[in-house]
Length: 226
Image (cartoon, rainbow, N blue to C red; front, side):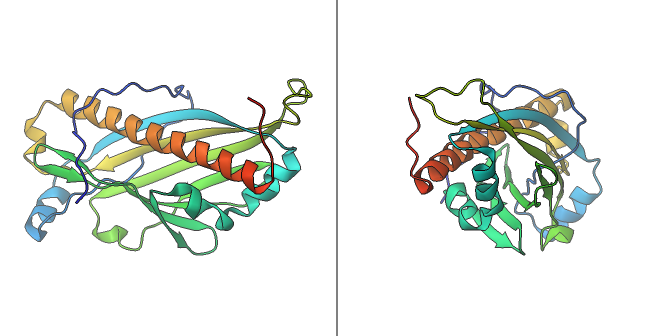
């Protein structure tokens, strides 16, 4: 049985906000009876949203990094662990992120991602429709872009060649709460949901970045200078 995370939290968030357009994203769903689902669909949706930027350093030239990213079926599931990532089609994955809850309401983040082939050096990740999306109580939108940046000006004999993978993530969630949640102050619901979304994304991005870095360097026999 998975441990529950409190729904009301105020975690520190180190990610730098991105000032781009906002959309709505990752899925949160409660285990509900049919009668409660009917009740949910009659309620006004609540939107949570956040934007993030990040960077990952890989000690190789851009061409080597690009070849590695193009081969994501060989490493994505492994690097996503302990998050369960199930391949979907040629370039998609369905991620189950765990369980969170409080106030008698449990949520389970689940999202489908499509890792698109690079287009003029830009890698994009978009939402894909989940197999049971028609029965879910949330709407998902996920838009991310990754770009490789060669940094010869900061390279040194000690560092070797360095390529930066810069990424921007635009995400949010539209969630249909049951009536009893709407008895809480709207500002409390909004603030709590936004903070929870920040917490989930920060935790996942930190873990995935570290594992991809390690996997890349180990698979290419590179020992980064410290």
